[in-house]
Length: 189
Image (tube, rainbow, N blue to C red):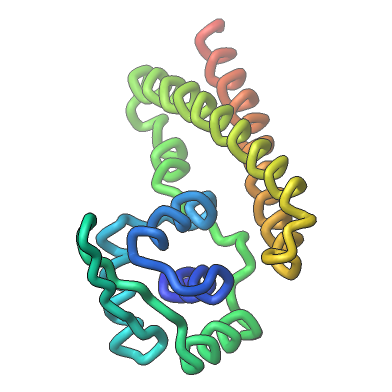
């Protein structure tokens, strides 16, 4: 996925939005499986406007700073649909993990590598627990949103991605428990 396509999807499904609203919405939805910094989002919005995928309108406000509202164009909608319906958008099973690479070679650092890996695994486990709690809350919200007609065609797809996040967190917790047990078993010998 490209960040551009994620942003196009948000503007398409939510309607016209400011950069601030897009950043906020992104961090409350897509951020569970695709991270982007605020500066990246604004850079992509400008690039998409240059490509003709979005238009913007500057709104003058008296009490607040002026704002720029982005709207998807027909070219942007066409690009989004082309990307969604593309035969090769990745399968979600590709893994590039500096974390796993570091663990793979931790034996090179002897006892210090084992201790550091245990610490990383325990910290990671705590983050996974928090992520799982968050995903459970997201799924509850999505089930509550089922009757919201604005999102009628979208909620089931959002549930599928949230379910992936929930299951992945459960897998990560199980894996961390087993990995910790292996490393702690070594220290008991």
